[in-house]
Each structure stands twice: as structure tokens, then as C-alpha cells.
Amino acid sequence: MASHSSRRRYLVLAICCMSLLIVGLDNTIVNVALPSIRHELHASVSGLQWTVAAYTLVLASLLMLSGSTADRIGRRRIFQTGLVTFTAGSLLCSLAPSLGWLIAFRMVQAAGGSMLNPVAMSIITNTFTDRRERARAIGVWGGVIGISMALGPVAGGVLVTSVGWRGIFWVNVPIGMAAAVLTGLFVPESRAPRARRVDAVGQLLVIVILGALTYGIIEGPGSGWASAKIVFFFALSAAALVALLIYEPRRDQPLVDLRFFSSVPFAGATLTAVAAFAALGGFLFVNTLYLQDARGLSAFHAGLYTLPMAGMTVIFGPLSGRIVGSRGARLPTLVAGVAIAVGCSELTGLTNATSASLLFLAYVIFGIGFGLVNAPITNAAVSGMPDAQAGVAAALASTSRQVGQSLGVAIVGSAVTSGIHGPIRASFAAASHVGWWMLTGFGAVVFLLGLITTSPWALRTAARTAARLEPAGARTPVHTP
Image 1 (tube, helix red, strand yellow):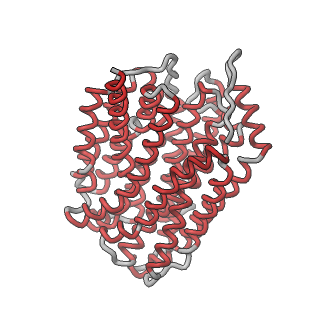
Image 2 (tube, rainbow, N blue to C red):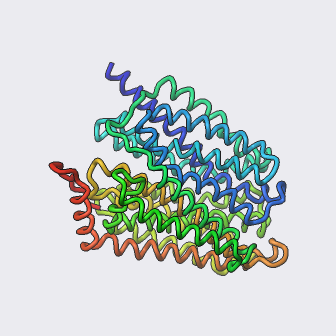
Image 3 (cartoon, helix red, strand yellow):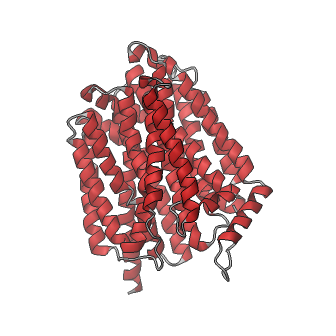
């Protein structure tokens, strides 16, 4: 019976990992297809930015809502709903007749995706109650992230070259359908003892903040940064942020508990996540267009070129987790910041004739940095938090990752777009220089935040914040970042 129970638990883990695989693949596989989408649907560079950013924007906006809804009405139910929605969105993306429809269907995908990863993590935590087993399960979960990132560029290259860009969305359909059926058969239903209430106003304000800001950044180069439309959207984003800061502290169960940010490690973890994933989003976006549109590589060969980066992420992701566990978050965060900055700075003089060896060296260094940065982000977000608040803190860190990726594509893509004059093949490499400098700056931000958030002063702010958040009579477990 015990053996059967163990097999059942690991089957649940495998089903949850299937959801992570398709969401993780979608993050990297779409980038490889961007040039093909541009040619077939006659899209501008800003249109390609929206193809990526619309997905990450909706995902970031709905993660907290999906998690709290699953806690309240049932995690299996929401997880299944997410799988069906993501699968349907993928199928619709493959049938999109125009860029506008593709972006709309990407948003449907993202709505489903928001119900997968955070809810799957809750299912895993609820299924694996033994600490040692849970640690192994989360280790497998983290490994799948690396695998999906490594598979994405190559799988995307193969599919785009063989059947066209629509094929990158077909791959999600059988996996999503199988996972939905298996979830109904084997995943137990669970709910939180005390689920958080929906904060509709806070949710709406977050959507307005992120949506208006991203719109202004992406459309700014085409419409003019000082145009009435762009100024309006930036002002709208700022006004929504002010409203959120005023409204949220007045609620008993806010969508975003602003008290968390009095902990320097937590605030630093959210900013580190934004900077690191902005670097990733900008890197994948600019590098894909450079390899295919400027350098003239096929989608398949462009995917192969990025394998060194993905391979380093697979290797250094688990290694970072072990370093954080034994020596703390400071070392991997600092090394990550340096590596991201150095890897991107190697490409600030990019030309169409830049040697492949230099490209591979930059990809390897960037991959090492990105692989090292994830574990410290999660650790810093939850360090010192009471057990009752650790899940919410981790969800906010996950949201920050998606916000960063969306802003990275928007900011870096817009900066590069502004420098393109004439045919993209002739001018893209030179126009990308400003983008690589910006990505170098994101690496520097990660390094500086690593210095600040692991200082003794920062750790004292985390302890004070935990004491304020801890319910009366409870004791905060000691976490050492």
C-alpha cells in the first residue's frame, strides 16, 4: 500500500511537470519563430514585441488571482481549467489568420498558463508532506525548467524549418490534453484551510499598471515619446500605481501586502527577478532576430546556436540551489550579476560577421549567470517570512519574473527598433548595440542588489518584517539566506 501511495505521489509530480514543460517551452520556443511570424503575417518589430509581451503580461497579472482562486475552490479544478484553456489557446494560435488574432490568442494561452505553475506547486506541496520527499520533488520540478529551456530553441527550430511557425503551438496540444485527462484520474482535490478573498480592485489596478506601461514602451518609438497617446498611457500607469499604494494597505487581505517590502531581502528579490528576467527576455528577443534576420541563419541553426546558453542554465540551476543551501544567497547572486553583465557586454560591438566562437562564449557566460540567479531569488523572497506568508511571497517573486520578462522585451526591443534605418538585415546588428548595453546594465543591477540584500542590515529588516507579519502566539521559523 505504501509503495502504491509512493507511485501515486510521483505520478502526480509527473503530471504537474507536464504543465511546467509546455509553459516553459512556450517561453523559449516562440522566440525562435518570430522571424517566420514576421514574414508570413507582415508584422513590424513592435508587433513581434506584443506577441511575446502580451503573453508574459497577462501571465504576470493573473498569477496571484489564479493561486488564491485555486486555494478557495479547489486546486485540481483550477489546474484542469488551466490545462484546457492553455491547450485551446495554443490550438487557436496555430490557426491565427493575422497578427492581431495571434496576440489575442496568446493572451488566452497566458490566462490558462497562470493557472498552471503556481497551482501545480501548491499541489506538489500538498502531495509531498515529508520534507525530504518534498525537497526531491521540488528539485525535479526545477530540473524540468532547465530541460524546457534547453529543448525550446531546438524544438522550435526543427518545427519552424519543417512545418512552419504554426507547428510550435501544435506541440502543446497533445501534452496539454493528456495532462488534463491524467489530472482528472490521479490528482487529488485540495483546498487551503483559510483561502484568501479575491481583491478585484487590486487585481484591476495591477492589470492597468502593467498594461499601460508596456503599451507606452512598445508603441513609443512609432508614435513618438512625447505624443499625447503615449504620455496618456504612462500617466495612466502612474495613476494606477498611486491608487494601488493607497488602496491595498486598507484591505485585510490585499492582493499585494505592501508590508512585505519593508524586508530589504524580499524587496531586493522582486527587483532582482525583474532585472534578471528583463535580461533574459531582451536577450532572447534581440538575439533571435539577429541570428535569423541579420545573420541569415535558419530557425533550426539559430536554435542550435543558443544551446550553449540553455545547457549552462541546466547545469548551474541545480548547482545554485546547493550553494544557496550550504553557503547562502550572496555568492551565486553576485556571480550571476557579473556573468549576465559580462556575457551581454561581449555583444555590444556585434556585426553580421562576428565570429561564432565569440557568440558561443557570450552565450555560455550569460547562461551561467541566468542559471545561478533563480535559486537566490526564491530564497531571498521567502527568507524569514512566517510559514503562512511564504507561499504568497514566492508567488510575488514569480510574478516579478514575468513582469521582468515582459518589460525586457518591451524596453530593449523599443530601444533597438528606434535605431533601425533601412533594411533590417543591413542595420539590425548596429541598432542592437544599445540593447546589449541595456542588458549589461541589468546584470549590473543584479550584482548591486546582491550586495545590498545580503548585508547584515538587510537581514535585520527581514527579521523585523517577519515579526510584524507573524500572527500573535506563533513563532517564525528561522531561515538563513
